[in-house]
Image (tube, rainbow, N blue to C red; front, side):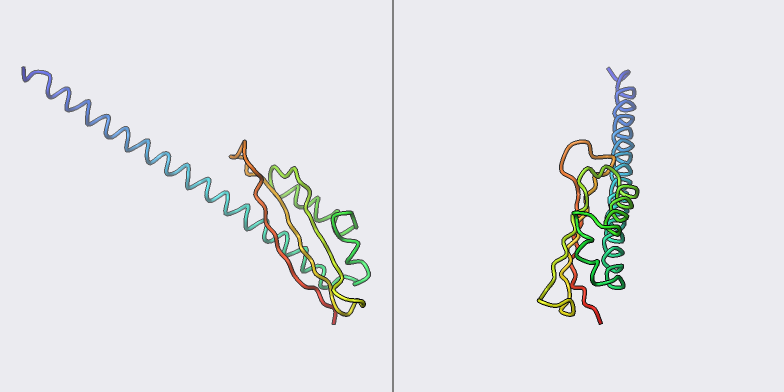
Length: 137
């Protein structure tokens, strides 16, 4: 009657250790995924803020042209976003609106970029949106 209890205890101990190892592997996998998400979000923030900061030093007459409909700066921005963020099927959206009757009143700029991490097969794209008021001195 006592012959199989040691073997049973050993099998239960192995099962508990195996479940613990599987839990650690799942935890490590989730940590890597979160790290990748953080990297892509910071990259998106950098790209949008860099594009808006370039508008501060550009010619005011070309700002309105650098929206989603085209423009040299917008096309370069779109190419950079597609190169540095994975899975972006939606083009960046940039709207530039003049605030008043003259250029000196400034422009309202809203830029949104999209991406999908390689680990996500189904589901919506992530997005980052920034808005700013660009005024000329």
